[in-house]
Length: 269
Image (cartoon, rainbow, N blue to C red; front, side, top):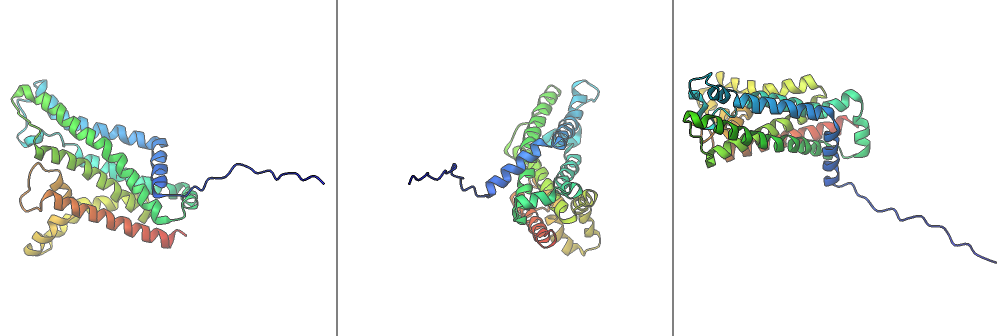
């Protein structure tokens, strides 16, 4: 009696879904979205065009000289505040859009651990915002420096200026990640953007109703003021050092993402 050997297919590799795999998947997803490229184009316009506009005016003799308020940055960060709203909206949309399309179910099927998805998406969005922002802030400053040089404005790239330019890019990444957390929490693009704007731009108004002694202790640590501190060339009077403000912003992002992960785990089952 003859025996027929059993046929065996190729061995299936043991593929485990690691943190790195999820982040890489999120980065690929962002690269394939048309909205990401539109966001990048508008970010370039806001940071580079607005930041260089006064210097261009000086170069073409439409302005008599560098504006007094330009300071050691030459006005290179003039478009950062508007860019902050843009990146916050981008972060919110990165999370809330999947609820609108229903794709969130497929995402959580592929990656059952909700907290991993929440944090990985924030990390991917933060990286997508940070890298071009660094190029834009330093590049804009370089252009402004060249344009204002003939007008007699010396804009050396000192350590304080470099920290401010890097701080502006980091600040944009922070706003984007706060937007991601708001998008997961509220599942609404409009609601998430409103929440980030209120947190950053309107929350400091509480200082008007607090006693002066309390306000002096609380206001410097609010997100909007901390963002301003890391974008300033040099120490800001009444504010903690830039490293302390950065640590506070990291704590805000960590707390927001932890809250978002907890809510998503309980709600989106």
